[in-house]
Picture 1: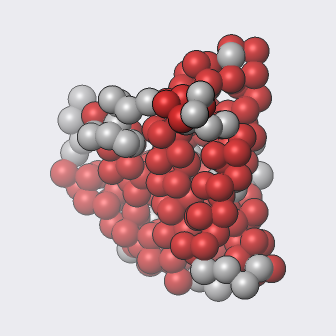
Picture 2: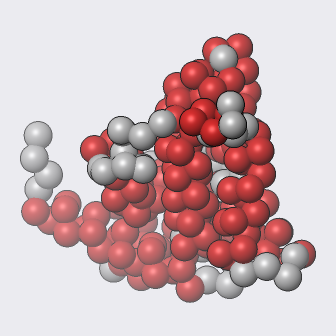
Length: 197
């Protein structure tokens, strides 16, 4: 069923207002549904009917931002898309996810820390990433270790960890990404074409 024009306009206004509020707030966890409704020029009831709750709004906003990365992973060219060895693709995916989180850190922090819904580990984005990582890891670590190793690698994408490392270490975001790549490469082991050399 097609969305009514006024409903589509309201949805876009809400997402645009929420995006601005979460990106500019000193503490994105303090942005309320009342704040978003007022900024979007809609009633609070419209906001709740459309998104359910604050976590639903955060997830919808996150989904609009991550759609480009998802498309690159599903249908894009290597190394994010299919067509490269699992180790190379995993490292590229991990780096792209870390970069996305750093670029969207306030929104990501609000989404990851919300307690109004299921845990972060049960979110659709995490479940999809974990399934893909597990599938790619099966050839590298064996089926019995793939799911656990996927969780371990994905833990590097937690925004609370990334922000803590940037605050505690004299690192730029680029240095942080390289550190993560180095640790992940150690976990994955040497590339297969170099293993016997």
